Length: 138
Image (cartoon, rainbow, N blue to C red; front, side, top):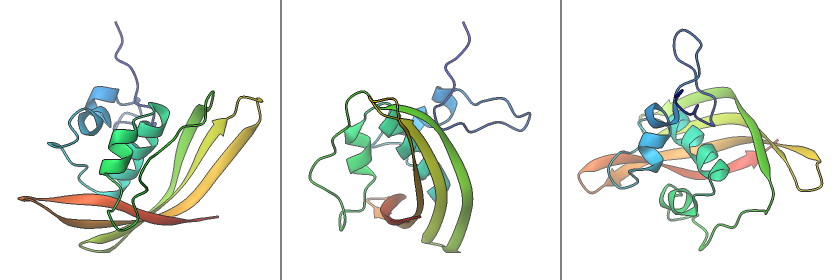
């Protein structure tokens, strides 16, 4: 049986899709233990959390200064893909990732979310962890 491809669309060096368990799955399935190593990986894993409707992961990876009290999902939305446009490391603890996420709503209408997201790395106990702060829609 072929492993399930990761919804984020990340590919290996041979341009084959990475398996969910080798990509975002290792972060989503071990929220407390395995943090995303960089801002792009966190952004990709958050996209995957939207696809899988994992509010727990989204809330845990949202910076506490901007974190909403709940995350809701629009019923019937189908996520169609993610395109990372750019990534910028601003310094050791700040980064930005520009992406376009595509989805189709219940009515069948396709929409795009184009955002430049900001991320910060902070201490979380004995380790460093990246957090989504906010973003500017394009």
